[in-house]
Length: 121
Length: 121
Image 1 (cartoon, each protein chain N blue to C red):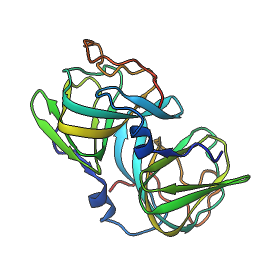
Image 2: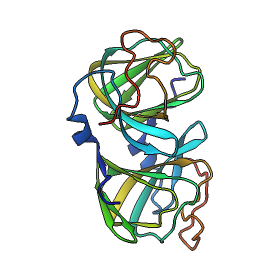
Image 3: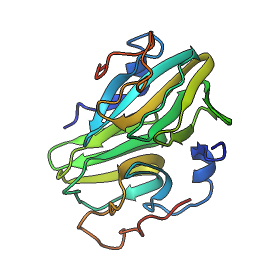
Image 4: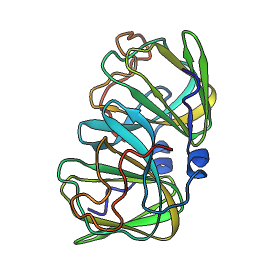
């Protein structure tokens, strides 16, 4: 019971790739992931699920077709299901993601930033 | 789309009661809550769901029947469903909770620390 404490800084120190979410914990049929982002992601949506972005360190933005959201450390945003969005970060930003198990980072958009799913750190 | 950024510090500045979770966002059929805790909670479990504790500020512990987990800022822990636990904090600790909508803070244990459900901040 006592060994499953998740320390985000420790988990984030174990990888350096951008746009490559790593699972740190599961809660029911959801996964909690950490990811390092820098630059621009691809436009995509998730047809079946909302998606939580929680900034652990740094700053990021989420572009929508009609607006842009800016997020700083200690802030979160829920992207509603089916809404096209494009995350971005000028400098490296460390982010916590909460979403159902099995969600692909690029949705159906795919492309070179599509990450392997269910990779733990 | 742009007005729903959740800033935890700002949300936490709006109330002072301990053991009284406030909803800050919903994701699918889950709620994300902030809570201030100090002292000892009651022994309880949640029969149907895991529960995420994520420490935003301060330090807390979770007592189990056979062990104790200590959590500092930037750490999280998933209490498995059905497992009896008793959160505690010597000094005030600010915590993020993730759990399905409708979960009662005391489980079936009830008592004076049972909080109103679905209270937003």
